[in-house]
Length: 182
Image (cartoon, rainbow, N blue to C red; front, side):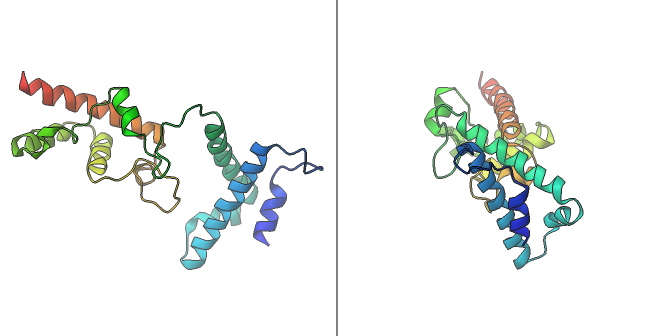
């Protein structure tokens, strides 16, 4: 019954042929997300559905907005910079834009390099430290799998914020680690 009520709240056309493919994709994503929330709540109590009990229309509006952003981002993307299976930026793309990754350095096997790297990480702001530590443990920044543990979900930040802070942290680490060698 809840899914039927949710479906009635979604925008639709009198003539189903007139609804745009983007709007149909948004509607489907909203219902899929709600279905996932219901399934998770059925297995174990989740506070996420409490908002639906209190302000159903507001909760549905939030789901629609999240779905719109996801669909519009997908539709407006010209070239996929991400690997299909993980959603992470492909290594060749990162290399082409010149990202520095202190963990791909051939010197990572050296104890001295690792200790200097650890000391350099300790100088970073807390958010950047946490991002770097999670990247070091191969936690993905974002994933299409709603159940995957990601940096974005763990820290409660959007993917763009995580990537921006990662790039800032890498720039600082590069200047410290390469500055030590000169």
